[in-house]
Amino acid sequence: MTMRLRHIFHFFLLGMFVGLSLSGLIYWVITSIWFGNHLTGNLGRTDVASVTPWLAPIVWEGTFDSTVIDSIYKQQNITVATTVFALGKYTRFLRDFLESAEEHYFVGFRVHYYLFTDQPDEVPNVKLGQERYLTVKKLPSMNRWQDISMSRMEILEKLIKNELASEADYIFCLDVDTKFIGRWSVESLGRLVGVIHPWFFNAPRFIFTYERRPESQAYIPAGEGDYYFTGAAFGGSLKDVHHLTKTCQEQMNIDIANSIEAIWHEESHLNKYFLYNKPSKLLSPEYLWRDISMSSGYVKIIRFSHVAKNNAEVRPNL
Amino acid sequence: MKVNLYLFFRALTGLSLIGLVYLGLTFHWIKLLYRPPNVLDSQGNFLPMAPWSAPIVREGSFDPKLIDEIYKKKNITIATTVFALGKYTQFLKDFLESAEQNYFVGFRVHYYVFTDLPEKIPAVKLGEDHHLTVLKVASSNRWQEISLRRMERMEELIESRLLNEADYVFSLDVDSKFYGRWGVESLGSLVGAIHPWYYKTHKEWFPYERRPESQAYISYSEGDYYYGGAVIGGLVKNVYQLAKTCREQLDIDAANSIEAAWQEESHLNKYFLYNKPSKLLSPEYLWDDRKPKTPEIKIIRFSQVYKNYHEIRPNP
Image (cartoon, rainbow over all chains, first blue to last red; front, top):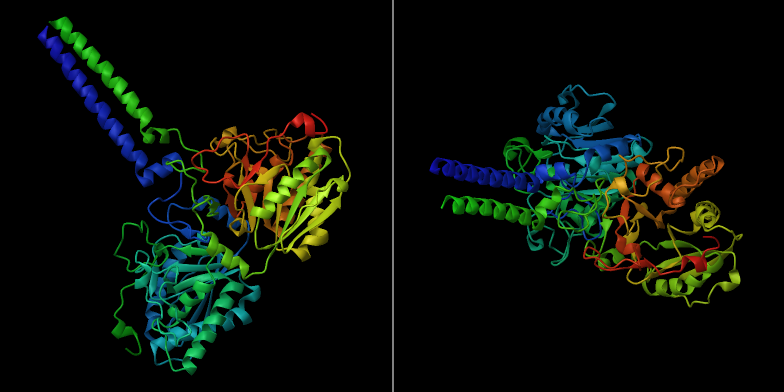
């Protein structure tokens, strides 16, 4: 009799144990963002803001369905122009940039790279996929990296006005000392697109390194500003990016005439522009991360990142 | 002794089972097993965006002052079409008066009222920079017919006037009233409103047109949301495209003697399936007075009023 009882007792305990573990497992599977979203077919991140107060989407992994978005744009036969500047020693970044772009950047869509360099022979021979084009444009060398950075605005404005008008629908302007390690595609398209700076997406506004001197055209007073955007990546429709580059260039020229240089050069002017011309879409720091090897809780996938570089070694000046 | 122990274990098993079932029903996680509909998250609030990154506009998702500032600089004109035929003219007074209180206040608005009884149009005092044009159209004996012809009339109006006169156009049902702010947060390239009666159902239950013979046919495996035909909006050229396509599909159906389940609303849903709206309005922007307010609806902005269908429709 006692044997039988014990059996029942043990069976009962076993049953409870199995039942509870199973429930626990199912609970974890369903609530963990990865499984949960795929099982329930639900999208939506609750840990980050996915829309700005002016209803511009902030693109994070988990806020969009790539299949749906790809099919929308596939119907539209778009061309994405992409500019990159590689002067002096920066040509060394080109191979990784282009090869990784071929793997991750607007795969399956028409892309036209415009590569600005002072050393066309240093441009590596990278095999491009179908419907992917590359045009090399020669620039004169420059002695100051700040000048190189700031002259981009003027060059971009001329490029859009003179060449791209009938050739592309969208344009992105990217830094070259970077690499793609995840998908960057049509979810990033919009009329005016800014990328949230990877070092400031979590920081309160008073820490943002806006230009704080009223003498500069890039001045943003304390208490103002929505986000801190990076100068290393921005884009949008040709019309809007042309207006952006034209305005920034004009503001920078006024500053030069007044012998003042904004604290973060064209990035300061870009932030001023985005304050008064709100982007229609923001890309999360997944789209320009700090370093390939670092990660943060919120950034679940790194798509595009600066690569480690020795500033003293690659810059023409300090 | 052993009987007691037996009983004890059976009671214990029974209680644990009841306990587990209770836990299952009360913990929200179990509800996830039932796959919440695409537009609500696990907490029961509207998702901030559709899967194609179109924002879903609801109270709390936008800053009205900020957004007003952005659009004030742009000097925009919003055209608004309403159809008030037969007895539906009785809704105009409330519609227009409540619009003047709530609808794009401070912006340039031009109402285009289609009616077969111009003398029934009430004299409503309009605010500054708000205009109203009455357009006379032929009467009809069937309410379905009136509903269907809206697409055609919108197409003609846009072609003849709006392309030059307005930036955005909204088409709104007249048997409704504004109860809260409806402003520039609703503007976008192509705007649809989520139907108040179907945002909690799964797509298999949406009243899409299910007969393959109709141009509005949507299969059971397809569909994102069920959009209300009472609210259509966007840039003039995009709404023109929508109206033109729907009108063409409606004409094909008419030639094949088939009328879609919900008339032009069915065709609208077919259009939005293949031409996804760039912005979605939550049911705050299209409510129904017959429906009690639910927690996920923070404020009712525009709602269809009670009406006695027998009384106002030309036909049952």
